[in-house]
Length: 129
Image 1 (cartoon, helix red, strand yellow):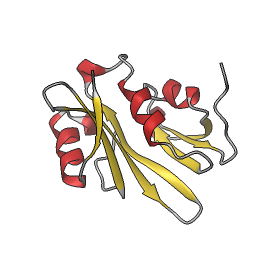
Image 2 (cartoon, rainbow, N blue to C red):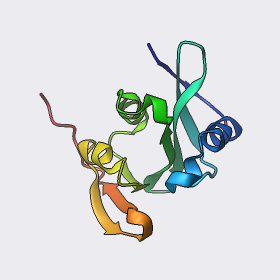
Image 3 (cartoon, rainbow, N blue to C red):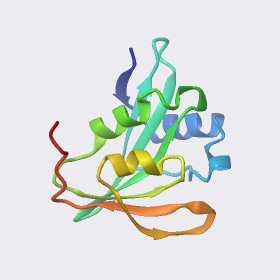
Image 4 (cartoon, rainbow, N blue to C red):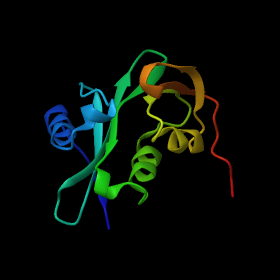
């Protein structure tokens, strides 16, 4: 059972450096808020950061440790971090793009290294099952 907790810039950046996030074109930078998923030993296994602007939010530093991918950690982080009613943007890698699309994000523009600039509108509502 993984749990979520708020972490500092330093904790999130150290986790990303230790797991070589930059080699996957993930920028290791500061954010206004960070949320981390931790394993049963209290070790960080995934992080997501958020920059707050006047009318929108930007996801920064979304990263899950390689050994924990495809286990619902990214989905758990996003579903507990995204703010309903807010316009949100992200630069997504080809690996993370399907996860963001499942959360209502649309590709706005493609960039270098197959990085997509994606947005989710403020009026997005999660489909009911």
